[in-house]
Every structure is written in structure tokens, then in C-alpha cells.
Image (cartoon, rainbow, N blue to C red):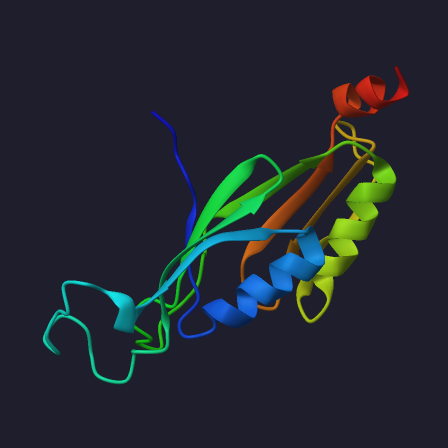
Length: 145
């Protein structure tokens, strides 16, 4: 069994994918638009106007696959109560990724030294996705070896 995050972007999925490619080096593994659905569901299932929107996408960020969609573009979005954690191998990489995610977003906890990490910070990106960027002592030690 594995758990994979699935993010909904309320009509901004394609923009989000491009942002994560630039900010995190994400690679889009798969993208399917609503118009490409072979089942062709009726308007009672999929509202009109979604043909060009992203029904399902998969991106690779480091070792993790993250699923994404525009959803039904209902005006509701948000990931309150959830944060994705980026465990990176160096303080420099932590700073770089944190700053990239913070572009157009909101810093919730500035990145800095904590009792549990040489580098830790929390930021909500421009899409409202919360990210914890952390460098573990084990990662630092592994890199030094």
C-alpha cells in the first residue's frame, strides 16, 4: 500500500504544473484533459466548459509522484490541514526550494535553524498548497560523507 497526494487546483492545474516544474524541477508524467475522457460522461457528471481543463495529471517531484487536477472548477479549493514535506539534502537546496515556493505565496514560518533541523520553514505557495521544507541532520551527514 502507498499513499499519494492528490491536489485540486480549481481551474489552475496547468499553471500549477508549470510552476512546480520551474520551482521544484517537477516532471509531468501524464496529463489528461476532460475532453480526452473515453467514457464521455454527460453534463450531470461533468459540467459544461471543462473540455480543456485538466481531469488528471501526475507529476514526479524527486522520488514522489503527486497527482493533480483542475477538479470541477466549482470555486472551492484549498488544502487546509494538509502540508507536503520536502526533505532535502542540503541547507542551500532547502533555501533555494523554499524561496522558489514562496514566490507569489505566503511565508508561514521563515526558513531557519530549529532544534530538529539545520534548516526548516513553512510556506503556502501561490496556489495555497502548504509546504514544509526540511533538511534533516541525517541528510546533511550523508552528504558530508
